[in-house]
Length: 248
Length: 320
Image (cartoon, rainbow over the protein chains, first blue to last red):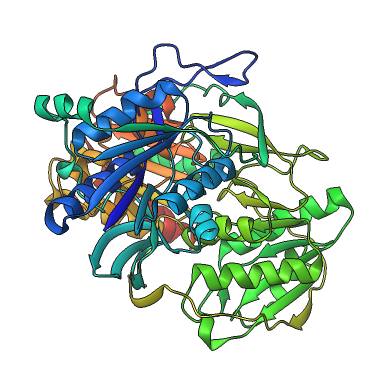
């Protein structure tokens, strides 16, 4: 089984979010970049398929050279090879079209992406990729088993979960549950050394066009001060929630 | 030309988000000088949609669509959009709608913006404001294609009633076989879900152990709320992952969010930021959550929560 894991290069979850150039660009100053958490659950599941079922795992990112340390980290975790599509990511459809090209060229059986990136939160790349490559598609995926060309997946739905039967080729939008938090791997020294020897190929883009354009960013309005209620006066809290906030 | 909106239902009843996306579609249609057409799947009586600005309803009644299937539903919505010549397709942010939206976008060669929180600031260019960086910021985005798909954030635009009647028509799109088949659905029907809840009661590590969740559940019961938890609580296995709210868990956009024993790490706050009113109960007055909350109680949850339950029961009895 050939697996492709799509890796987004995103600000660490603790990052303070600021903008520059008249609020049109994300300010990367002092920001630590990591593998998108939803992608990391998928990568870790792919490692399981590699170790138990002999799968071959390639990771891919659409981005400039600055994203290579993130791809190297994925190699250090255990992926066999990496591909960087050498263009800046502009929007979901542009990224999906560039990835579709990689998928078609490489003939992957299973593609695992995160259900969404934690920076732009578009939540559209895996679905668009499935539509563009005519593959089956399950998102919000919290468990995945593959047997031959058949697959069984669980999807989180509002208020529960559902189990679906499907088959390869398959695109997955993954999230926590695909593996547990405690299964995530921190690269060890041997992995880091080996990652340096593994192939990281840079491919030129097809120059797919974006369909949306980011005009500017805004930060949420600053919050007013908290109204503190004395622990001995919970009646007041009930009254505030009813009369002032009008939520009960 | 009409604005097309997919109005979701469950067991023959519209979900609240259906009325919210209909209200949004009406606002877009008013700006563009056109009408609103809704598409429903096995929804039963659709006349209610008229009260939220829908002019025409395309009712799909097809037993093959009883179970949700993203590819089949997306195809049905695409066929409706083509029949109506719609330039704008409005969807909700439910798990199902977010599943099918990218498929609809590719099918219609449409640009897609998700998590949109306001009516378009302009329709030419078509410009919307959406959340980004997991609610730590907004991104103003233009959709530059001829056809546009807009995914509306839950509880951001709200319900806008209008007087009108929705004409109803049967619609029978061609549905082809899908490569994904639902085998079983595991859904508690007696519990309020985080996605649908008006109120969410959430517990953190300050509650010391899973055996102490009784009072969280009781408080949720009194309020008709959903229960949720912080990331450490789900990582420790005290509560199921499905309750984890925050940046890498579920987003919460309820009217009221009550955090008990949650310190308020930046990742947690990002996930619950879209909630309208936030209450925090914590022993530590320095907990970062107090900076993000509207109301706060500095105190021991094991004393405050039982008192709050008692006071709320009395309040409910009085206002029943």
